[in-house]
Image (tube, rainbow, N blue to C red; front, side, top):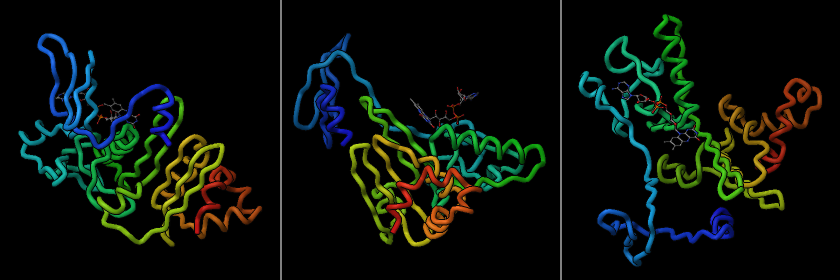
Length: 237
Ligand SMILES: Cc1cc2nc3c(=O)[nH]c(=O)nc-3n(C[C@H](O)[C@H](O)[C@H](O)COP(=O)(O)OP(=O)(O)OC[C@H]3O[C@@H](n4cnc5c(N)ncnc54)[C@H](O)[C@@H]3O)c2cc1C
């Protein structure tokens, strides 16, 4: 869907192609891939982000297996009273508790609040990372909350879930859930409901509870924001 949108804007999309070289001496003139040679005068690299842990390593602070600074739920490092937060830390996924890098501004902010509170002697725990990514691609908004199918299978070794999809004029929606919880949702175009899904996931509210509130006018009065996620709830098995 997104590829079609980008191509519609006149961009040639090549997937599964690895850049093997950049050509030009004083100025870039092209790139080579495994299968092609393309002329260009600008190259933009977007190849991911890595935690910068040099300072922590120098201080003898423990680094986790994913390359981020290891912290506990107080955002405290392996050295007592030394706290870390943001892109440099390795945290854990809220749903599965597995180690992850959450290289997002919202995560950094939430972790910073926890670290600051604990520094000031006010005990507070970080619940784990919940990924919310919003992108506008060639005029189309795409939102991903929680895990994708690919992440569930490959990063979390999880196969026990159902996937429901819906494509309408307004956009595309995919909801991934098990009987206990929503595991992820992806929106393209109309993303109404993304905020409700993030809140349901953060609070660990089960699909059954969500549908119960939406079906009960009295309860809905006290949680009107549930209604924003009605399109998502309809897809829950
Ligand atoms: C291009 C781009 C787009 C992004 N878009 C989004 C987005 O849309 N939504 C989102 O949620 N996140 C986005 N992010 C990620 C987001 O910017 C980061 O997750 C967030 O800034 C992390 O905050 P931080 O404080 O951990 O690190 P930073 O914001 O990188 O701040 C770290 C600071 O520490 C300083 N520093 C480093 N070493 C030292 C040292 N030894 N001594 C003193 N200072 C030092 C650095 O100069 C820097 O100012 C984006 C990132 C990039 C690169």
